[in-house]
Length: 247
Length: 197
Image (cartoon, rainbow over all chains, first blue to last red; front, side, top):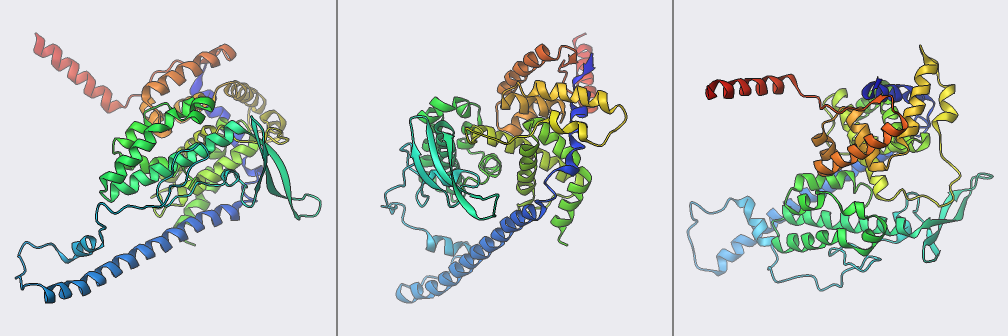
């Protein structure tokens, strides 16, 4: 009787020998480009955040003397907050001010978080950029996807049919990832109203009709309860893994 | 060359085969394995943090392969209903560079791969992480975002299916326990016995 670990190692070794013949090398520039794009995005985002912080500090510094001029003179308390906490107080919106914008609804009728729009279904597909919805039946969607014409290299719109359940499950995953992102953002902003609203939406996921009908296994496991239980590090890993490319 | 580019290049050069073999065991399709490996490399290297060593990067990319695979299966393997592509080990593996006992190794690899493809994606991911990656049940659960009990169920189902197809494969699952843990357990048992007398 052969040992399973040896058998798996053998499988890995045998198939691994095909690696040099794979197309990965041909696509190597693409891999590097994709990584570089993410990294550049992070730098740009960090720069915006840094600018926002600097702007907030500057604004707070300008606002404080004005307050002092118009109010009674109060000696500074030795226990007063450090200057870095001032912009946060200044920038905080009153708790009862919320967005009055109608939420964007997913294809299965559930709301997206504020500021997030439901995607076009075709855009959820790998290579679906620029594609169009063509038609649907009870069980299928047909999209026109842009593909290179093998004869002359021009781009053609090719009608391709997908199982409806697959597309709806992708839409549900996109919706779930949007709410996980919202949950993490709200938790880190110490905003209990948004946090609990996101938790309510996330807990709906296993019971969504599309999940129940097409892939109930996706609602199984402890990952949702772990996320809404406040394990934001786990939630971030989930976003980085299962939600990668979704938002 | 920046640090991450250097590490990425070294990783693909020195560990590319192992990582590709790992991705292939999960997908059973050459082209899917290539896509999976590319996605995993992007996932692993796109964050601002760069792994501290080649080994750390290797582990990170393997985890990324597993999560990307489950992610794809979670999306119900969205593919055109009429698909004209798809690789197959049988088609290309015989053309690989030969090694000692090439034929025997290839035959057993084909048997195992064929058997793996009878498993559902989650069962396959669990069994590959458990036996190819030698992860504990808890580590498999953590990697795939499942409860340990769910992983045990998938492993049990997967073992039952594999035993039907490959009765000669020893799938007895004794979790590897570190030497330190064993000695601590032994000491604690002796202490209890000693104090009870």
